[in-house]
Structure formats: structure tokens, C-alpha cells
Image (cartoon, rainbow, N blue to C red; front, side):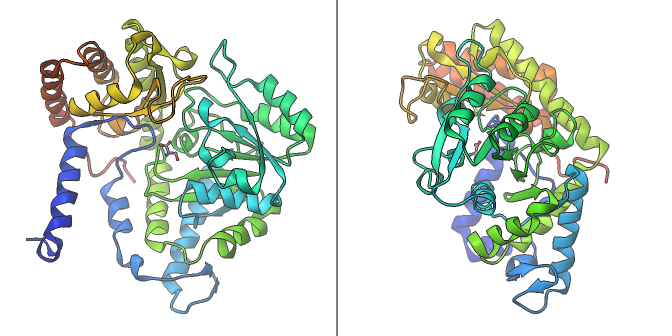
Length: 416
Ligand code: DSN
């Protein structure tokens, strides 16, 4: 019997049930992944017992001999991997990281410009319900309705009209390559800072399958747990000239003590991400996603922008007449976990939108390749066709379980 089982059987049982679900379901939420056993061990270590307010060599607590070394290793690994001047590994999440990036560069009341949430941007890119729109005036660029691609001309026109002090690029539901160079140009033209949020694509950037924003952005913000395959956390990377402002904005500006257990696990994930195996993984994520997109298109699904260049697919279900939530729930019963999502110009409300967002980081970690990605697309089609037929959903569930048994969640993903 484990200690946890002995002390708290309720939580023990729920964690075990969650683990079983993660192993016998197909997880397609594009912002999720599986971490290696090494990352999990670091994350669940004695470092959770520590406070370490400050930065290596400048802490407000004693006994930091090992924590200082751990944070220094994490920062240095990220610096080398992303080829940046300075890294802060303390943000608790992507949302805090974004707020800290803004706080480092601009003042409350200044104007920021980001991608509309309804077109694939993130809440913290100035969206109405986010505090970022209370502290800053927000202007939104959108996708080109004809192509489903970011409308860079519109972004430029809006930038010239509103003169934002900061432009944020990056997305949470955008299936195509982001032209960071174009955003860099627009920002320069209007004298704005550029923040690139690469939370979704950080692993693709280090794996060489998405261009890096580092040469173009003042600050690059990311989470560490999506395609980068680390623990849940955030990082800010920046040019040397912004280093002090970024560090001050994170601590003491927005946060107290850093989560050293997370920082140690970020360090491990960064070591894994620097391997040739990880670059192969990143390439496979994209190949799997393209294979899944093609199979969906063949079955009459409409995809925003017509396909994908990255880890993510956004299905516009309006031609199928099925609300996103209804399909996501039916897929959940079939053992395929996705999330319903708005699509650009969606007339339906966000709690019951017309889109479904799926992606391939997690199935690729399990070793699934193009044939399995295509098979999953066929199951999505079968569930959509039999949306009100529980026996169809049950038969897909059985096949999903069989596939999952053939691709168990590995513990070690890379040769260090
Ligand atoms: N909630 C994350 C996602 O699922 O994309 C972004 O913060």
C-alpha cells in the first residue's frame, strides 16, 4: 500500500482513476501532453518544501545552495536552447508570464494590440474579460475571413491607427505558422514593443519545425507544459536590455516565492528538449497533425484555414450541424478527449460554440504515427455521424481502448 493510499484513500483513488483515463483514452487537447518519469520525479521532489524569493545569489532566504544551482541550470539550458540573452524561469504560468511581460515594458493605461480571442488569441492578449484589458487599452487584430490566416495587413493598419505601445503575437487556437518577422516589422514601424507568446509552439520552435520569434521580439513568453513537454509552468525570455525589468516584473512585481520543484522539472524537460530524439518528436507531431487534417478533410470536415502547419486543428462544425460541445461530449464517451472552441466569426456563444479544437502532442508522445492519426480522424467522423447513437459510440470506445493498449504511455522518451 502506498503512503498516499494509507493517508488519503479518496485522493489516491481519484489520482489512480485519472491516470488510468490518461492511459486508455486518446488525448487530443492540443495544449496537453505527457511528461517523462524524470520530469515527474523532479516535480514531485523535496523542492516543494522550499521558499526561495529572489534570484540565484540574491535571495531573501538562507539555505539556497542547491536551489540557486538548480535555477541557474534551468536558466542556462533555456538560454542555450532558445538562443536568447536572458531567461526567467519563475512565472507560475503563461498568464502570469504575459502579465509580467507587459508590466516590464509598458504602463497601466497604455494601448496593447493582440489577436482577438474569438480568432484564436489568448485571454491575456487583452481580451475583454481578462485583467489585461482592465489595465491596458486593447485593440484586436483578426484572421482574414477569406483564408483563415492572420490578417497581417489589418494588423499593420490597426497598429498605425492606434499606435499601441506593445503588440502581442502568438495564439491558443491557430493552426498555421506565425510570421514573427512580419510582426517585428509592424512593431518597429509604430515604435511598439513586440511580445511573442509561444506557449503552444515552444516545442516546435526548439524542434526546428516552427520559426523562432527570438530575433524579432523584445520578450518571448511561454508555458513549459505543452509541446515543450515539461511541468506546468512558465518562462520569459528576452534581450539583455530588458533583463532587469523582466526579473523585477516577475518578482517582486507579480509573484512571491518561485516554485522550485517546478523549476527543477523545467530544467529536466529542457535537457530532454535539447536532444535529437526531441527534434524527431516535434517533426512527428506536425506530420501526425497533417495526416489527421487530411483524413478529416476527406470526410467532409471544414478546417479553419483549410488545414494545419503545426500541432493543432480547428474544426468548424457548422456544415455538419453539430454543436462543438455535443461532439466533444460524445467523443469523450468514446474515449477521445478534445475541447469545444469558438471558430472565427462564430455566431454561437463561447460556452456552446461551433468548433472543436484537437491536436497531436500527446498521441505523438505515445509513439503514434500517421496511420494512427488517420484512424483517430475516422473515429471522429464515425462519432459525428452517429452522434445520437450510443452503440456507435460504444464500439468506437472499444477500438480506442485497443489502440491505447498498443501504445502505452512511455516513461522515458529520449536518450539523454
Ligand atoms: N488554456 C490553454 C489552452 O488550452 O490553449 C492556453 O492557456
